[in-house]
Image 1 (cartoon, rainbow, N blue to C red):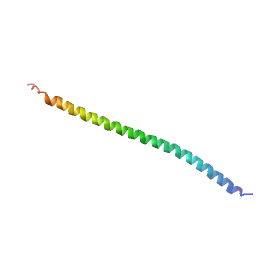
Image 2: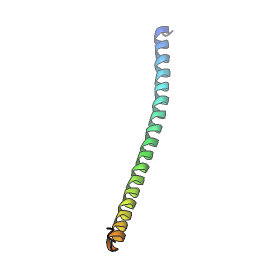
Image 3: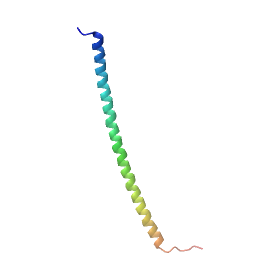
Length: 72
């Protein structure tokens, strides 16, 4: 007959490993989702920055090309 103490310790270890695995699985899944979200936000920032730069150049051309009336 196996030692009762070793059986209980083995069972506790097995259940602890299962619980840790379940928790780390959730954490890994959330971490991957956060990384995808961050990457999407970075792409959005790059696109918006590009758009702002384009519009700024267009506005400079529009304002710079037209003669400015001096108000005195």
